[in-house]
Image (cartoon, rainbow over all chains, first blue to last red; front, side):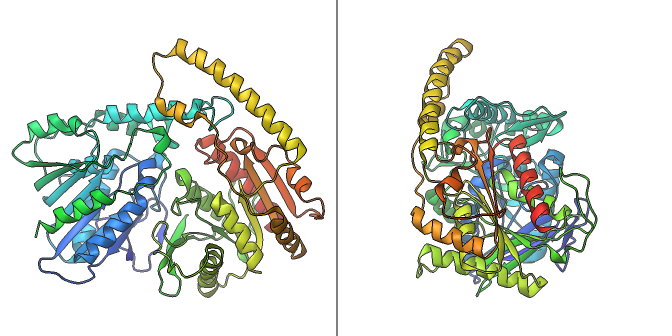
Length: 275
Length: 288
């Protein structure tokens, strides 16, 4: 695993330093070169989900990246601006910035692997962001439990936030997040009004054309929520249900680490079948 | 300007962390006075994993803390021990305590080699607090420890507080149920699920901790214990720790704070700010 700093048209810093949110390389990526070459070379970008879901799934993506590298893939995972180890604060983040980050991460992976085509696996809102990028024509876009409607997603997160702050186990008295201009606190993260507005307007169903030769949707729970998406894109979208619920909308699970063994096995099989 | 760098360390470079470099200029942002003095005298702060959460910490709190401390001139290293975040799984041939000492020792060795660091403050929440205690006992390079919701042992006063609190919560819950039925048509079932308290913390034997704390005080290790309000079942009043260990003369080496409102994971922004300010103020007071 090799760290790589990027974020300005793939202009990496040799020494790995990042300096300030407006520097040329504010994003941290972790590149897993292939353990060995096994036939057709493939490059896979892993797009994390957002907020607490990012923390929940961090180790699962580490495991997935290692398994993909062991299967001969070049793998890159990265933290969006204002998340994880990358520069900036979540309050400063915008959806446009995260889409641009994804496009730059694809450039970075192409540069690191020397390959021209990339497969993207996105989880939850990371899948949605990957679907919104249109700079690159992907080889394969795999949407894992994607957020199909941003406003429902925010509504679920707000429900968690409400139940969390009134909980008599977590707090001795119901709590109210401190009021800050233009900021709403949702599941422990401070989101700006412009970010919330753009997330709430995001709908996968409004995508007219995918920037990917193939699109797969892997659902770990509630497969029926994807019926409309399947209908609209019946000619291009391959759907699979792996019954291993991640319980994304459950308050009691928000601090549990994700251990999706079956989904990871399924994804490996899917990527393997691409060759 | 924030400056951060990946450090991979351990015998096979199998462990992973991020150094945040001290910033030269002083800052007006914190609640304590800042200094422009040479940062070489300041110990390096090690932020340990909180449970299974990787090095960014719960709700990215470790990143905020590291960058805030760097403004005050501290070098901070937040890193993953084996099997967490980006560090490889452990070999499984040692017990947990021995492995913890070895791995945090690797982190200190790497920082000593790269930056010449020779004094460290270990900081951790939950299991991270226990690990901070363990490394402080085992490694003389540790000159300070910040333990968030570490161990606590009952006293007569804490037991009385515990049962009074339980009674108050029962009353609150009854009142809450009545109110919530009026205010809302339905409630999330999760809320019911977590409402019952579970006594799931197991602390090391008190006698063992007593001997170890005694040794830390003798070595002049500075200690800051911070307890969350939600931890009041175990720790309910500021002097409980002194009452737990009356044989130890802590002198002025022990500071204990309770952040009454907060939960164990510091989920709300305002609670994290209080915590970060308390840690910053204590570090500046003890190691400026």
